[in-house]
Length: 110
Image (tube, rainbow, N blue to C red; front, side, top):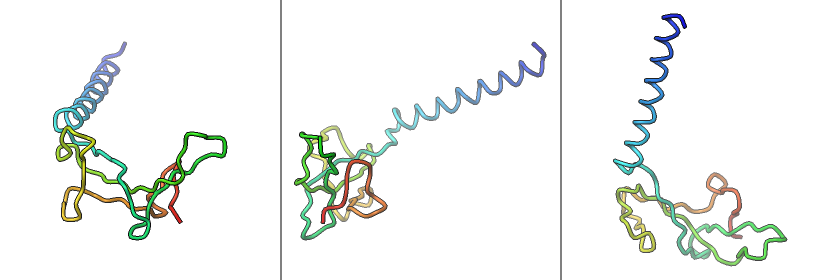
């Protein structure tokens, strides 16, 4: 193997390991990721999500409406079931249903 190829291989290997290290640090050490939860939604007040079920899916619920809350993991705490979001929280995002926020398997309740 030529000397130039060895140097290039070393540099690329170092960059690859650095990217993995930074990702590990951000995700596991700093806890820099979002936690998203579905919460109850009143369709008379907000634009709510509902599941978009296939006709052959018997376990899908098309009657329960929900909105989503998204919180950075460092503010979420360890109890996922009690996770809440107030409108005054600057770190918390309440996601209601719009064309831009609909994901696969859901639709806006009408």
